Image (cartoon, rainbow, N blue to C red; front, side, top):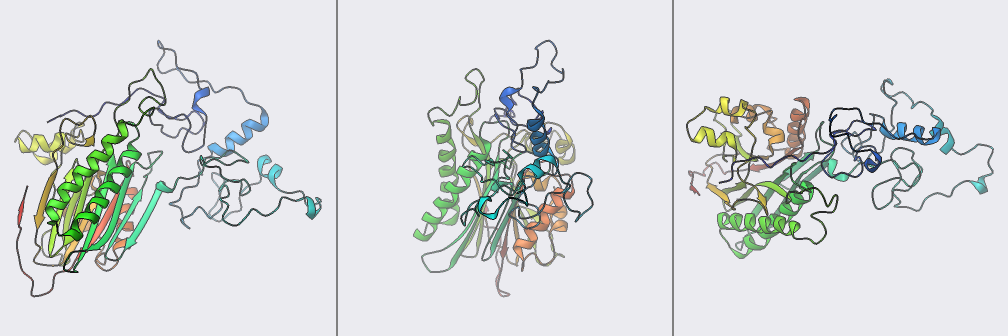
Length: 434
């Protein structure tokens, strides 16, 4: 089994315009739209030398400063779609935005005849969240002020019957490399089946956001095809992980994409982790590759919670070998070096699946390490789950994401919640694991 973390590649670590963290291969800053191609390469004998920003005209500098303000808008702000005002740094909450030369220049002159004013944009046109006037082009930039627009993946929420999921880019990353898929279907006997898939892009790989999205979609589609045909849920989960792996592998085979940014720089194949849960026919089936997890939190909190997955990671290997206890292993800087992932450069694919038959009602928590880093043990996760999460899964997922953000939000955060109801007369035990 491969026991090395995918290597990080050398690149600018921060945007020269707004100091937002960058990913290897970025040509533009995802926060402010800064053109990174104009930044000169640092001298090899002075790796820590400050990078000079090319001189700009007064108007260009003003526009750049406006775009680089730390009050950048994201979809996870109140309102959900960016429909709110930008406040200047240090402004009191609710205060009107300070007037700026750029804003004054874009505002219509009150002396201008109405016939000469710009016409109202057609319904459905996406307007810039910064200047409120320019149309957003297909690449996500304002045609008027050039401001990079918030990406829809920065914050995503979905509730579908008895399953809900929330994903957030966190407070340190410049993009969200997690993805999820939730769905419901029916078994051949008409009984319901509920699916949740959560994927975490490997940041040191190329295009991790595409890898996680492809894996989540492929696994979900595979389950929606196999479960209604009567495939056993545990077998269906295994096949779904294989389908997700093939989907991620295919990204590395796309012509012209592997070296799209710099033909002189090595790029790792796209990669991600995957964890999923299926509730069907009274069974709870989980499957995973990597270090994303599933937890079980009983409705009756007097009963113990449990972690239902084992990490494919350096820390887990040390604990399994008896070389360290869990606290020591996860405190080590190598703890999160993963030993299993989906991707063309994975040593081998080893899907893990487990099947359980709970004898009491509870909540299934499916999450990336962006959450469990702040609630690692089953007891800590149970304590973070709101008491009414069984009845309000979306609200519960929102609270858990908030818990991670309050803890520091160092990584992307994704969690799906599946309430598992058992009739009072139900009984059973664990069915087995593979």
